[in-house]
Image 1: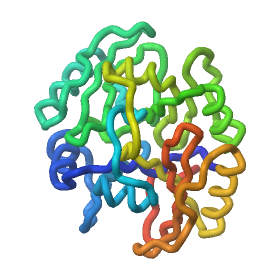
Image 2: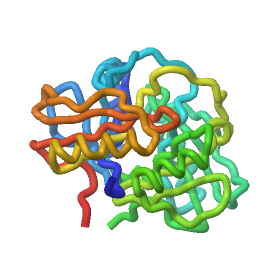
Image 3: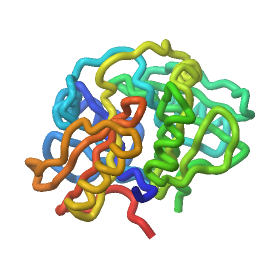
Image 4: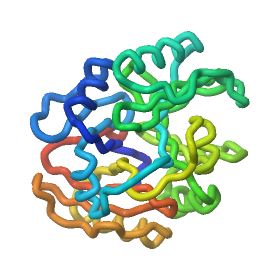
Length: 136
Length: 136
């Protein structure tokens, strides 16, 4: 396998609500595709939104699921202030603050929000290393 | 928010098993960090592995969870044959074939496997567009 994740697809119970959260709320660049999916072309892996039941059916698994999903997406930023700002932005856009930002035991600073479908995002500042694809 | 996913962190019940699956089994490039995490630097978002309960605790949520997680990671390739080859490779490395590869209604070809912790990966060939970060 080549070292590449092409897309992260999140199941949603309301595609328009989820697409609005990421496009208008967080300002991510949505691709002009019509239909029952929404794609965002990111500097890193693409983000896809697709119906929760449709995604389960596509994978051939039952759609029922509860509780912790064992997955978190991270968005790293350049400062503590930017962590605070982005968490506020996400909450203002319809996300839910799951864990307020705090200093971490590894010397950084981070907090978590959940998107309207409960998918977890960590907003993190890491003073030790550059994580993930770098911009520009 | 800038258009960037820095890292996708997957919770695991057995860090060494999961790291072996991705490093030796699938050949992803692991970063030389010690401790209770494993990081893979990909051409796209990084992949992180962290204890299931630790990840839940980091997010401040209960660790219990069952069933469909509403998330799938996609790895797109250049041909149908490559889809088949990678699904076989994943199964040989300790993954589970969840949905055998087949022609899709959107004109592509894809199948799904689950990693040793049940996280879903789609291996896909899409003849219509280049999805995600491009190599090289």
